[in-house]
Image (tube, rainbow, N blue to C red; front, top):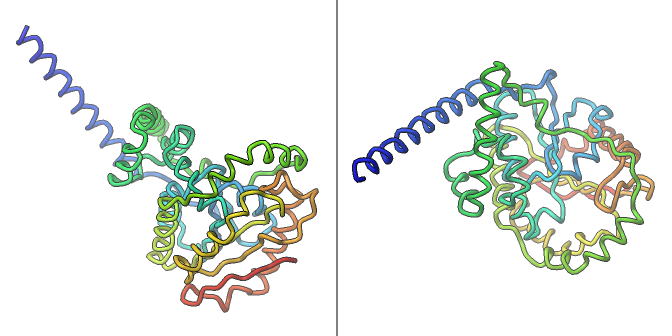
Length: 312
């Protein structure tokens, strides 16, 4: 019985060793061959979550690429931005959505919640360093292990197909036709208690990774501009405005910010209280294009950051 258990233990050690070698090779291979290179040389890059994803129609903005993704915390944006900046030297300015809900305690869930690990870990897991893998495993080991096999299948498929293109899967402008403001207001009233609880706390972790993105852009010699997309006046997550502006002032005062929070978007331009539909996106995209052509950012460097409020 003892010999059997010893052999069984050696077998599992050997199996673990083989798996580690396979994982190591696949990770090395992905690092070496992963393609994040755009087909065009864009000067301006948009990063962020769903607010930016549906607000900036990059077909209407000159020399501009939107790769924002719904549900993406700064944790995953950091790793995506790193690969993009490594392979797209033409980028001069990175815009990143910085808005009220991104400081809330609920953003922790966006980093290590089951839904978000399932969505983002199989995509960017090969690029996440050991320390940050430890963060995910500390908070949700079971989800990391469950999605590890998905990551390996994805990597193995890339190896078989000799196709390492990530560009088609990293986000982009999403066209929405809907206008569900009335429904959104009713839903917000039903969930008012949960909304207030999320507003009371702060996600130090999400803010930490925004700080890392700031340093990342500096290391690549890129200018970083915060941008806050239009939000409807009755959106509940705007209630943490005091805390939001305090964090901006205390932690990011050197970063310029284009603030469209109160930009005049008619009700028909909203998909819901926090997101624009295609009509609202057309308005704000043309405005941003006009501002860039006018050179509004020329006088605002990272050494002299300020919040520029644009309401019309």
